[in-house]
Image (cartoon, rainbow, N blue to C red):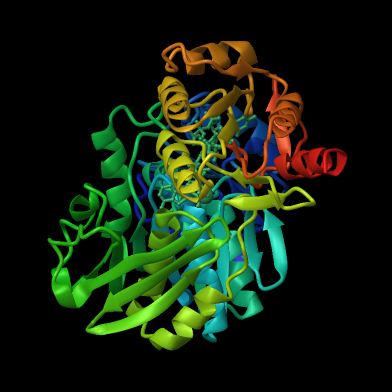
Length: 498
Ligand SMILES: CC(=O)N[C@H]1[C@@H](OP(=O)(O)OP(=O)(O)OC[C@H]2O[C@@H](n3ccc(=O)[nH]c3=O)[C@H](O)[C@@H]2O)O[C@H](CO)[C@@H](O)[C@@H]1O[C@H](C)C(=O)N[C@@H](C)C(=O)N[C@H](CCC(=O)O)C(=O)O
Ligand SMILES: Nc1ncnc2c1ncn2[C@@H]1O[C@H](COP(=O)(O)OP(=O)(O)OP(=O)(O)O)[C@@H](O)[C@H]1O
Ligand SMILES: N[C@H](CCC[C@H](N)C(=O)O)C(=O)O
Ligand SMILES: [Mg+2]
């Protein structure tokens, strides 16, 4: 049983306490009044669209035993414990950590941040650790995975109370490590406050979420926060080919930084700290590369096309070596890693003469990288086509950019809806089109119809990229989510058109 006064003792900063704050049983910690059950601690967070302080009354009515806030309400029930704190989001993280028995302290936590490649890299690290005898859970886009159990997730990095609940479940299941994606939202909004990371991985930084971060500099500062959170043995793994790599580790001693390069970008890194990969061969089925580190050379097989996937695997490998795993074991674990749904997922026509690829490229850089990768494996004389859109209620700057990239890099473009959410689907398409400099294309807002048309146009040897939704099993239009899967639609189209 968790007692309220023990939780209060875990708060890092407390301005004032009033009311009934004694040894009462606590049943949970939440920042959402709609989730308050009798015995819960409610933390009032000032948000972007609402102020949690407005819901204090509702939380008390639902049975909260304590309310944590940045401003005490004038009227307060004596039966409740009132805690005034300077920062409610930090308090939420501290209380959650204590409520779940500080489970996170018993896990080696590996955090992966960057604009693209977090899920891919984190899943590779998880598979490698599990294959190397270090039982590891995973938290990231869409799901938390503990052994064979998957728990669906709304956010890439859950709110701190959700995170600590998952760490507790991992420890109870016997995990020694947790591999997690750390989004920039999570870093800025203190979802990972109080966590200490054994390894922090940086994949890359390109424009995205510029609705949330005012500038690229601010976005980079947010990502750097992860590298201030290393534990005493902690180390960083960088994609050193990214111009922001050295910025991420400016506060770390060089011996705690491993640099990965596929293109000679690690000059700021000591040679003993470098992991270099050279691509030898690439096809739509995968990529063969050669890895050099600490005077050794090893072969690496990546079951996906794209030099960036070589980088994702190289960084995962460097994490393994940094953790002291024998390099052969680490590489074997990576070679046997489970595929990640919706990342360069290939769907073939029955005669295998036409190929569709479902990919989660939903940023300009990812779309560019995915198209470049597929161009290198498109047979001479065959065409590369793309179907894509852009999400609503998100960064609008990326829309014309993605239009420009598709127009420049694909032979055929069909614009369609991604998840328009609350926006008008046609208005989103107008914004994408604005970047296409008049290039001929089709515009079909209905995604199922757009996919059908694109498959109908495929000739012998052609490749079709269906980008943006990857593993997602839904589409959200005007606020309503309905089942939708790019893969299922493609399979159905190929079934009708052998
Ligand atoms: C910008 C952002 O991340 N916002 C998150 C933030 O919202 P907020 O603080 O603005 O909350 P708010 O809606 O204004 O409400 C304020 C407070 O009142 C509470 N409330 C509200 C209503 C009510 O009836 N009762 C109540 O108590 C809310 O629970 C909240 O604590 O805190 C909320 C509670 O944890 C999150 O649900 C919310 O995620 C929103 C929905 C979101 O869309 N986030 C996305 C952009 C996100 O986090 N994405 C990242 C990156 C994705 C990636 O690149 O991979 C992710 O990690 O998923
Ligand atoms: N290292 C990389 N560099 C550039 N693009 C990449 C890289 N790795 C993957 N991508 C592209 O980004 C897409 C998303 O990959 P992934 O899901 O691994 O990224 P993510 O960072 O987890 O994304 P999200 O922010 O949505 O969680 C892939 O489908 C691919 O198109
Ligand atoms: N993590 C990203 C995912 C975007 C995926 C894309 N399909 C969309 O809906 O915009 C976000 O929530 O911004
Ligand atoms: Mg992800």
